[in-house]
Amino acid sequence: MRWLYLIRHAKSSWDHPGLRDFERPLNERGHRDAPRMALYLKKMGVQPDLLVSSPARRALTTAQYFAQTFGLALENIVCQESIYEASCSDIIRIVQALPDEARTVFLFGHNPTFTDVVNRFSIHYIDNIPTCGIAKLESNAEHWADFGSTNTRLVECFFPKEVL
Image: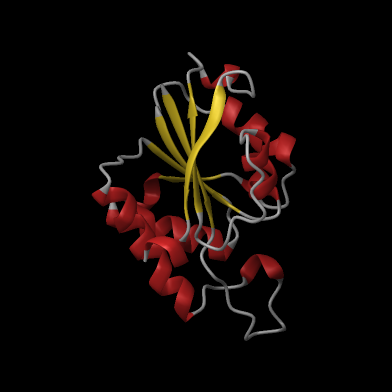
């Protein structure tokens, strides 16, 4: 089995209107929720083999909180520029290019794309993956290159307001 955790960046700040969207930092709630959600996964026994993040500041900061919680060096986070402003198909292509030795992958990114991806693999419509929300996808694909709708399903979602 392969597990993909789609993790939407934590809550970002709009306090600096002059900043480009790409540069927006986390706000106070984001700095609180990211480590708590990481710890929630850790307590469930999840151990990532690979962390891949959008290079946007809010996503990368979220990924850094997860790396710290799981005792991983920040240098091990792989920045994938194409996650920022990606389409659903782009995300699937990114997943299909993941290295096969990574069985459990945390992918940090953005809405509305992550909600669209989740709905592609869910039998029930998900209205919105909230900030720092996590969707766990399970795939029986032998290789990430084979990841798709015939062998992958949404297993569960973890949202900060429900678990914290």
